[in-house]
Length: 305
Image 1 (spheres, rainbow, N blue to C red):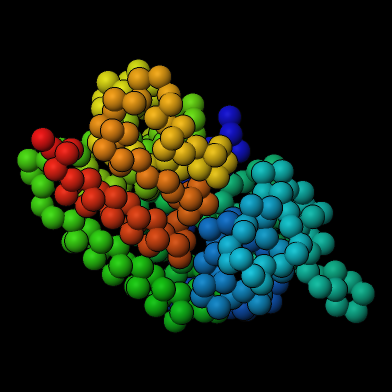
Image 2: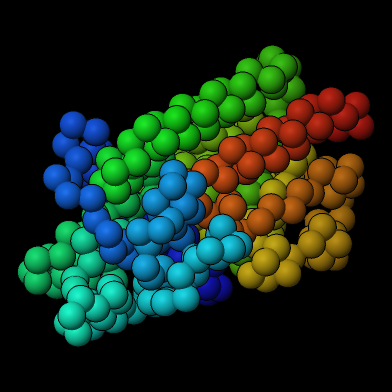
């Protein structure tokens, strides 16, 4: 299975196993951590967006945004070691100091338990299942790092932007817009019970993965080419453009796909894997792109003739 899908599934399954931890400003840590380690690409983006970037001394191997200013020290979040985390912080009088805060989104190698036993504060921020959960995590990072005001402002701004996107979609009771969201070329998809699926549902679309899912899928069923073509989606999102180099042309070349409505009418939309698999500050970019595609498809008379 492709790396991006493994990461997405790991985060999502983790969210089912561990409840989201919400922290208000009133319950923030008493000391602002000078050394923060982020083992979550989403948390990394958020920390820099709220002004805590100077406190971040190491990030995971997949963190790549912002494009400038990230620390050079890297840790493999899918296979972390206690030693790699403990050796991150700048030394004081020749002795290494422990991180004041470590943020994870996947508890690989039971790293949370091991670090906690050594007196390191570890906070889990698993993939949320709702917008409220994602915004909670932003506020939590603000509280934990001493950037409450900027985190609250970011969360409020994101909420307003996404609400505006939802309102911008015209009512379409007679237009049943069928959508297929592709995570990888083996046809893994996501349902409306997932975070991104819930965002799409708020725009009034029909997710073709919903009818095919089972409880064992954890919201991420593997569809088949036959099922997708028979469902005839009018809009296709490709969240495997970076990992797997999938393009609308490659989708058209698949057996049976040339006659699918989305392919025929040009409504196959490229998404950035990175943006689509994270739930931090760039979530508004993803929502804007999804919303624009939905409105474009609804307004296309060829789709509804």
